[in-house]
Length: 195
Image (cartoon, rainbow, N blue to C red):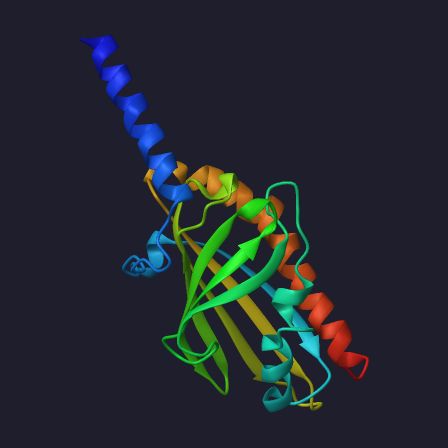
């Protein structure tokens, strides 16, 4: 009986891996959860300009945050994006994020306004994301008294199971924190240099 159970579980695992490799062009995003169900990392950077200008710089495909994130040992390099529905970054639009090694993720804009935007990421295929159900990211712009803008990026991960929480916490602290800060710092440096 144990042997049959193991064969069945192995078949199920292999079948799941096959489905992930041949994922549909657009699957429905998982439902958002209560705030306490997420593990969150927050990073900030200061841009030398008002929120109205910083907003466009942060989202710029050529020099924004996504263009400045760098691969880590566990996070593949972002190589580009492919539109799926709508015009990104309009609210409700969905795109595929392409990564080195052929890995992908789906990303949808939940809301986008003058003081920030919020988005959801799911269907992550990179091996380091196997314990992640979905992610909710948020960028907020806060005008400073001296005319500069503080940009805050929060990244909240929903684990697939409760027992995954310690592993995801380490992943956020050791891999995603420098990934996020590098993206923010790179975008800020380009913007602050007059770009």
